[in-house]
Amino acid sequence: MIRFGIVGTNWITDRFLKGALKVEGFSLNAVYSRSEEKADNFRYAQAKSKLNRDNF
Image (cartoon, rainbow, N blue to C red; front, top):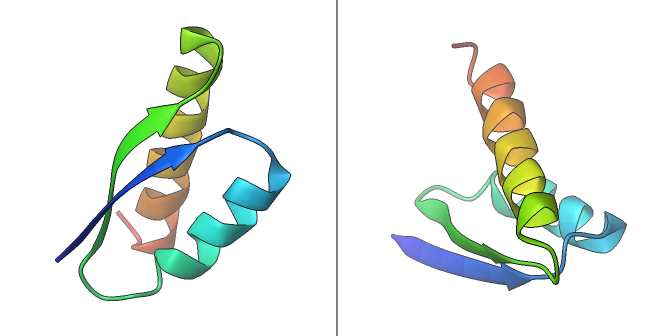
């Protein structure tokens, strides 16, 4: 398993995660942003995106 934490919630981080989530065993465990609200929104969007890709 690859546990990962990211710093920043911009477009390049989003693109990186789209690729990383294709790797078996990848897990996003932490998101840091200057704003807790932005970090929570980014984490929620990533979780929702992953659920859609996995057909849940």
